[in-house]
Length: 91
Image 1 (tube, rainbow, N blue to C red):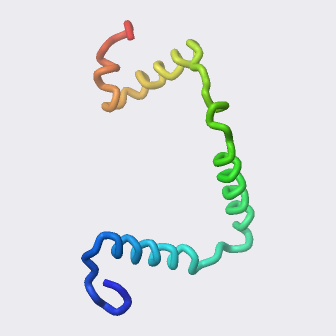
Image 2: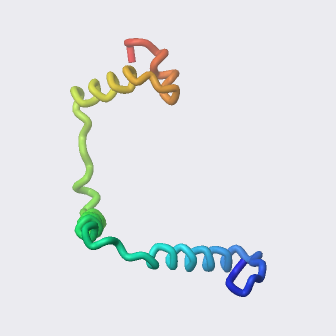
């Protein structure tokens, strides 16, 4: 329900009202002065990541790092990798 207490049924209007409500909540309280530097760092890091050339982010997985990752997966023995873990040492 909106501020005038009418029921919204249109998807776009619901999204619009929800977004406005969330923005109001997030902007209502300003951060404490001792934490402003953290927010500033996060904004700078975000801008830096957004400006990066994604082609530079291509990387090659070397065999030693691959084995380290596989060992860690097997050591943790999570159900997500159940079939992989049951496959045995060959994999």
